[in-house]
Length: 140
Picture (tube, one colour):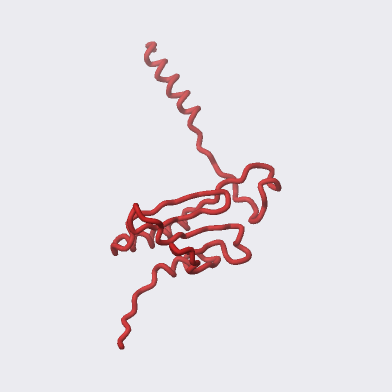
């Protein structure tokens, strides 16, 4: 084995040691504080099915030309999916997941740019349905 091959093997091994897949523990009990859990609070995030529902709606609205950009934020208290008409403007809507409110008002809500809560509830699909309303023809 040449000196070059042994250096490459060493680099590959050290690189593999540095990269580790971080597995998140199961979500803590809703309403539990970090002090009760014995550690720092993990950021709240959307799981795969929640993101699929949100991105399906987002894709339909982008195809219709209504929305153009989005942002996702994760904090210790909530996860937020913000929807923009243009990247330079403020968010048109925010889809928020707040696990602390799961038992009281429902973990999900849709908030308009003005701060008005359009819909709140425990089922994400029903909550984001407020943004996916079909227009109706009204004859006068």
